[in-house]
Image (tube, rainbow, N blue to C red; front, side):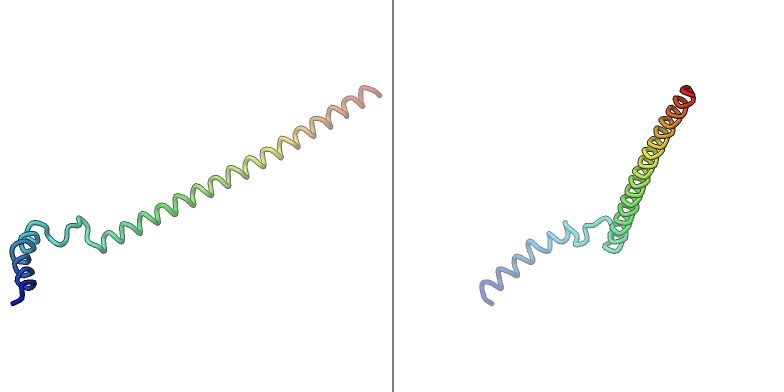
Length: 91
């Protein structure tokens, strides 16, 4: 047997075998398939949340633009009423 093979055999027997006993191969709390499902679930929740935030922001901007148009119409009508009232006073 060569020296390298003997060293590898000794290394495997003395170190790796004891290391495997102390540190099992599967150290994860969740199995791989469960981790994948959890990850996909988190991604879906993030997508739904970001879509909800985007839709809400769009709705708020539309509401403000409608309120602005209503204020402009109200101001224009008020000005028109003032002009009509001034015209009636002159008659």
